[in-house]
Length: 412
Image 1 (cartoon, helix red, strand yellow):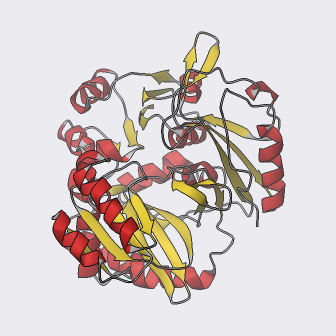
Image 2 (tube, helix red, strand yellow):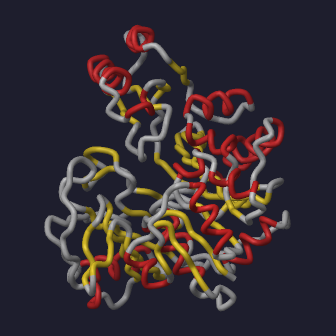
C-alpha cells in the first residue's frame, strides 16, 4: 500500500511511526512532513489541494489520512472523493463543526448536547454591550480557526472588551475573529476524547489530558499544547458514562440528521465539573499532542482500524494497561514571536523514549528547528511517574538554542 499523510506536526510523526509497523505499507508520502517523516518516507512540499489530488492519482496512493484542520475545512476530502481516491476525514460541511465555533455551538444547542450557555455575535458593538451584564470569568472564542489560540478567559469587563477589540477590530487572528462566541466559564478539569467514525457509529479511544498553557502550573498564554498524558488520571468511568449519554449519543444523532456523517476522526474537548461532563468543542481530526500518547497505547493495527471504518465496519479498540507521557519542546518566545533555524542536538542520546519531530526539518545531516513546537519526547510505563521519569531524563541531552519546555507534564 501507498499512503499519503497530510500535515507536518508531531501528530503526523506519531501516525507515521504507528503505520511504519505495518509491512503492507510499502511507501509513505507526507505533505509536507518534517524531520521524522523524512526518515520514514518522502516529504512533498505541496499544500494546494488540487495539486495534492493529482499527486495522489499520479503516484497511485491507496489511502490518504488528513492530520490538520485547515485542509479539512478547505474541502480536501470532497476533492479527493471526486477523483475516487480513498481518504479518511470529514467532508467540508462536517469539518465546519471545527471550522466555525458558531456553527458548532448551534449544533450542540439544537441536539441538546451538554455544553456551556453561550451566544454568538457578528457585531462588535453588540458584543461589547453584552459583556457589560455578564458574570465573570467569561470565555470569548474566535469562531474561526486560530491555531488553538483563539480562546480567552476574561476575568473582568475590561479584559472582555479588550479581547473583543483584538478579535473583531484589530483582527489578530484575521477573519477567524470576525464572529465570536461568548460563553459562561465552566470550572473543572479538561479532558480529551478522540473517536473513530465509520459513517454510522463513533468508537471512542481512552481519555487524554492536554496541557494547553505555556507555563508550569497552567500559567500564561494558550498554546497548541505543551504536553499530554493518557489516560487522563482525573477522568473516571462515571465521567465517561455521562459523556456517552449526554454528548456522544446526541452527537451521533445530530450528525445523521444534519447530513454530516463521515468516516474519519472526531475530537471531543470536554470540561468535567461538579455538575458533570460538558462539551467545550469539537475538532474533526486527531488532536496534537493527544495523538502522541494515544497511539503508543493502541493495541490495534491502525491501518486495519481505519480500513474497517472506511468499509463501514464496527471496530473494537483495545489499549494497553499502561500510561503514556508526551513532553513538547518549543522555540523560545512561543506561542508569540520566535526564531527558527537552530540546530537540534543530542537526540541520539535519547535512550528510553521516542523522539517525534514536529517543527523541525532536515538540512544535510543536521536537523534544524522550523516551528513553534519543535519536537515531542514520548514514553510509556506502568505508572505516570515511570513514564514521566523516562521523558524528563531523555529531555536533558536534547538541546537547541532558546529551546524550552514545561517541567510539570505528567506530575500529579
